[in-house]
Length: 273
Image 1: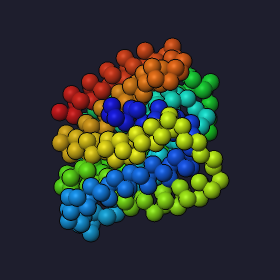
Image 2: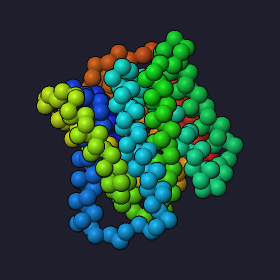
Image 3: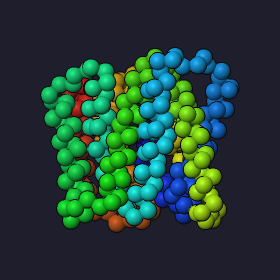
Image 4: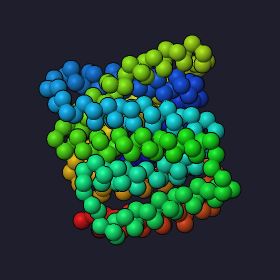
């Protein structure tokens, strides 16, 4: 969660020298290179045939769609605002996981999860004068595809090591990301600033691969439902980084939202047990 909380600041840093489509394609290509090296070194057996459809969902959701939609959104939306919108991801992940696995969390769990998501929605609308922006719609799309990738990846991690789940996922997405990168580099200018290079390196090594290794492992250990609700704290950390690292203005509503969301996390964790 901490690793992912820096993804938005890293994306903004990458946009300092790369265009949005170039950023999306290159981070996927570089992550696939890291994943390929890891797989060649470990030489694990190929996933089962029945695992490939779920790995395809991981590829589309976590290795392609989420990075594309959030990068495009961050061109016009602030890091802090975008982070809070993404706070609906835990509820979406829990809902999709329940559908896919047949598990039925308790009513208390759902009440707390929905409350946490509602806090995020109210916060978002209050910051955009009650009307969602184009960036908000892109972020909602990012939530949908990423939740599917999280749910399927967490389910796979029950029998497939988490690092292999994301490794195969980014490799499946590599051809599309490579095509995006090649086409984007022809039309988007590139300025290799230190900020942009550091941001790109973080996105590829941590946001697109390393963070998922730990995340999917945690999902396998404590379950997708409980793990997904821990992410309710991620937007708050991202807002903190936006203020500390990027100098963004801290909305007055953030402390109130922080207390409410953290309270929901405590309830969901207790209910999940």
